[in-house]
Amino acid sequence: MKNLLKITLSIFVFLTLAATAHAQDGKKQADHKHHWHFGDSTRMKTMKCAMEKFNMDEFPLCRDKKKFNGHWAGIDLGIGGYVTPGSDMNFSHSDPFLNLNTARSVTVNINPFELNLNLWKNHIGFTTGLGFQVTNYNFSGNYVMIKDSSALTAYQVQDAQGKPVNLRVNKLVTAHLNLPLFFEYQTNPYRYMNSFHVTLGVVAGVRIGSYTKQVYKENGGSYILADQDGNPVYSYDVDHYSIRDVGSFHLNPFKLDAAFRIGWSHLNIFGTYSVTRMFQKNQGPEVYPFTVGLTLLGW
Image (cartoon, rainbow, N blue to C red; front, side, top):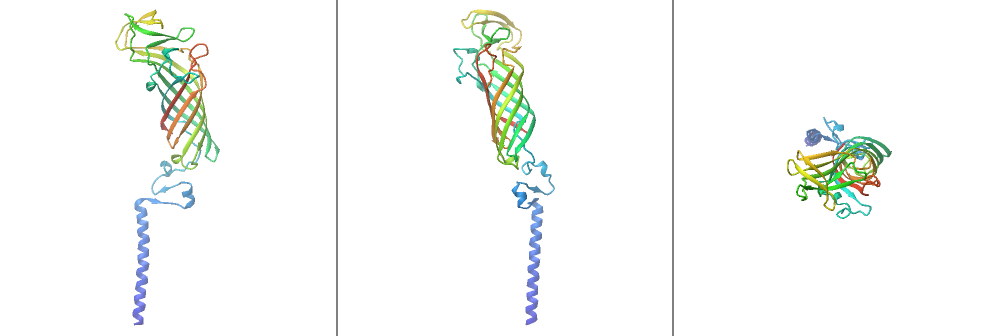
């Protein structure tokens, strides 16, 4: 009886050890099957994860942020316009040719170069770089700007019978080379993809081109430019649907915009307001451009 009890106890201990070993082996197989294993608490604290047979540096959701990375480089899309010193966007009485179709006044920023400097533990940094900006100011009226006058002047387009002509497109396009000077705060010093950011600074720009474009509804025809009193001042013929006129149009050659950017991860909303006049002093109306938009692609 005593020997039977020893044999039974030995079999029970053996089966218990075998079951434990099998469970541990099954856990390893499950871990291997799902390709997940985590490191110690230090690695978890730095938001670092690893995956078997996977290059962690190629997986942004798990990648450590080894240096400060700002939010300038990328492609932005926005809408904008300009306001008077009193924040008025209605120019019906003073300068009717400045009235905009804001929904069609689009700004595109292409910012290929970015340089970052970590100022404090990857939370606060300084960002600069280089970018290109193209802004389309789409006018709601049918006034044409004249580039070779001593001050900015615009005349209304009329047909040969003196009736106002509705233009399919009437816009001023400006192009700038931009240099940002940003200070940025990021909440997460470890992961770029899981961090809220706020950016404040200025964008300095130099105008590298500008032109006006009008697209007529008919291919060809004779037209008249008239002043605000309806008096004809110039007549011309159009051979094609559109006319494009390159010139400075008394635009300021330099600009300085106050800027902010805010968002999470690659999602970024931006806004700018120019502290410099759009047109040169005593050569055009005193208006200040602005833009609001979002980043379509950031890197």
